[in-house]
Amino acid sequence: MLSCIARHWRAAFLIVALSTCAAPFGAFASHFRSGMIGYKINRQDPSLLDVTVTTSWASNDYLGIYMSSPNNGGTTLFSTSSSDVVGSGHSPQGSYYVTLRTTGTIPVPTDLPARIYASSCCRIDGLVGYGDYDGYYSYDDFEFAATYVASAPTSMIVDALPFMLCSQASAPGGLAYFFVPAVSPTGATITCAINRAIAFTAPGELTVAPVTGGCNVGWKNSKYTLGATAPVGLTVTDTSTGQYNEFTFLVTIIDPATLPVIGSIQGPSGGLPQYGGNIILTIGIQCQIVINATDPTAGGTLSASSSSLPSGATLTIAPTTGVPPLIVTFSFTPTTANIGGGVVTIVITSSSYLYTIVSFSYTVSPPTP
Image (cartoon, rainbow, N blue to C red; front, side, top):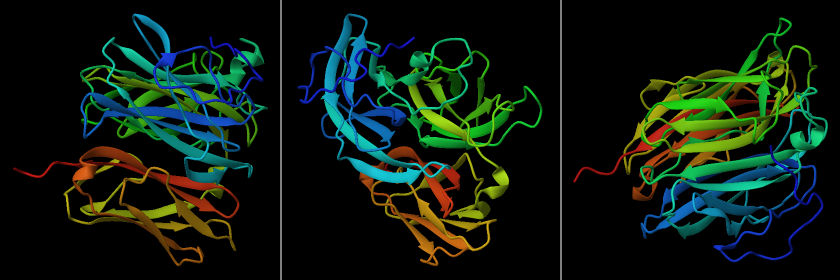
């Protein structure tokens, strides 16, 4: 179980890459929401690894990023930047959060497997789900990571919102489910597992199974009320390489009847499902995905956003006033810089801070010689 090493200590300096690890640093305040790490081999120099860290907070903050391996207990790699903003939003209760994304470049690890991670505290107050199994301080801590292996030049691709939404189970002791996007960069099958070491919950509180395009998480939440929020830790593994990511976020109980409604999703080859769709893209040819959405609440407006758009992609809405029905258009003309794949999560949000997600993966193949 994680321990909060220095709950109120803040480092005021930048650690030089690859210096000796001393202790986690960053802001130790109750405002962490979510964290994910991904990596891929640098396109210009294959001896380097680009490590991308995505975090969400109540306000701009930063973390130290470390690496451990069989012969190295802990090395400091770099710190994230509190100014690397890629998006913002609100929880269903209206609390603001900001999403930050920093990419640091390091030498490709040779002592393998190499776990690239962040570890600190503290999560938001008032969380549920830990029962009497352990103290709240263990529940308050967090960790997230990506493990580098030589057989995987690109890590698993994951994209969880800071607050995922879940309905309430109708039967006592029953499960309610929500979807988390996660795919292998090569299209291989994946496994999903609850990770209680990085986001503590009582045994049996959460379950998970792999589905097309990600993980289907079950939450035993009938004993809670609307608005109750719990932390989630997931490990997703690429079965073809053994590479795995550990990431964490929050989940909140909502009434699904109040969420924006997706009417249709049209892709380049026809309709797409709301979750788990995949599109194949050709370099130089524009692709559009058009989403139609309505709001069950009369008099409200809708907006659309995404913090996971590939470079060069755009997201537009019509009408621009946001008065539903809303048409959301994702447009993307891939270039050679986009070769590979990714996951796009589009968030359709109402003026009452409730939202629905549309998630799909994409693949850009290199041109035929």
